[in-house]
Length: 315
Image (cartoon, rainbow, N blue to C red; front, side, top):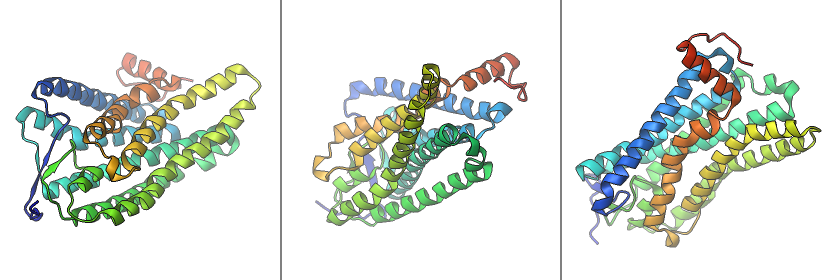
């Protein structure tokens, strides 16, 4: 194949499906999912800011997660919607790698925030007397800011690495510029890059997961020591939604990024990518936030009082 002059090249994103008959159903589904994500997560952010009883470390992190979810879905879906309408799926070479940078940074920040949230649950359940010290406002801000530095440096490294490759094809078999899809069309020997991704990527992606698993091991041990069934049920209910998000996120991420390139499948990859780029951001306010009793009470007060009464306590 002829090598593309990647100074001026334009990639073509294959999209979610090549079947013309699926354009309208896909557009409708993605538009609804995108609107639900924007409305649900934006409402959660406004609610957390407006209601003083939600000004706690847990809800500070949840508010950050809501904003991250809005960013994550906005990096990919608007372009997909535009392509489904206009049938123009082209993206400039540099635009592709700008999208790659923001996607990697924001997606990793999502997992880092889930890890910090697991620390919050550990401190609240296993170290209640030290909770205010462990999860102080200063500590929360420091953890979030440090995570942003790590994920941005990680993303910058990958963006430089992928943009320096030589590409033999302009068609990216995906609905956004993602690493595995770009490796498939590269003329360069990518074996070293794949090994680097497996080692360095494992550290960045899997470290939060192992931290979450460790935190919940201690949490489960503490819960099992409770003498009352109602106490166990209440504590498990608090953590179950968080674990649901973790399972959906990491099962799809592990499938996508930790396997040999010979096992890449454009069709399956596009379906699996939908889990963490569309469904997880959309479902976050519903399976995590709105199942929480404090949030439900705050929503009722917010609706009844038109956003007022922020200083009331709903406990």
